[in-house]
Image (cartoon, rainbow, N blue to C red):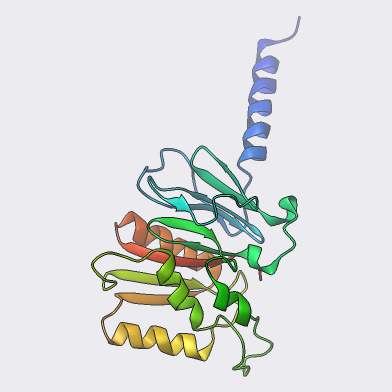
Length: 214
């Protein structure tokens, strides 16, 4: 006869392995995905080249026919290596109150034209996320009643290698000084998504740019 305790241990071990495969511990962010509020777009998992977030009720994809990610049970799962999306644009994502999606030439033509450059060295003032990105970001999801309540969050990569152009930094600074937006923050990707989750849970209007590469 096989001891009952052995059977129970085997069953628990199998269930644990299944959970670890479906919900692996991602190095940058590993938030629980149980009982997520329907009206909150929250990032739950983050790793280099990988991202998972919960779609808020009514939130739509910017690119409905995009095959660069998987979507099921109101969760978007991005794993660019598995999906073999050989395109630097695949690593750039935006979340707004009503939309989500990749930064592609369809909605961000000028941004893609000028490109998003990594910082070669700390003294480099060229390249980076161009100022045009900000205007195209508004166009994706214009907020009724103005933008004074909006918080902009821009991530500069997992290791902070993505440069923010001086012209974009100046534009953000001017918008805050002129009370056109509530605030803006430029952070590494991990801290950007943590701050995104915090503000969304507080019911604030948040526009977040997420770069899931270096």
